[in-house]
Picture 1 (tube, rainbow, N blue to C red):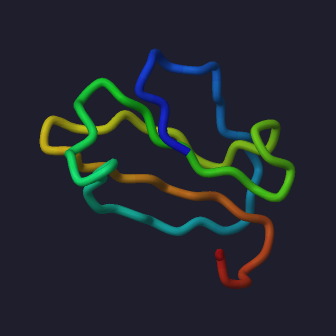
Picture 2 (picture 1 turned 45 degrees about the vertical axis):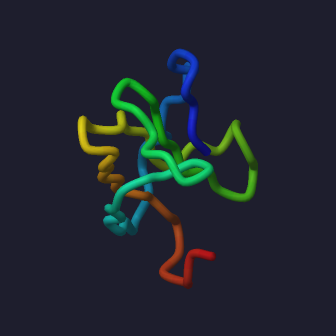
Length: 75
């Protein structure tokens, strides 16, 4: 999920056994998402199951460390 209008109060949980790194650039309708926006990843519990949060950088780039309790694929 991407927030472009102020940062929600998403806070990743703690105590997960596994993690993975995800990085890239973000576009929305063909335009770069601007610096100051926030990207987040969620588990099966939706917004109450925050797995990663980070700000989007100056070049629409991001880096997330996503946490999990199992080593299965993330889809």
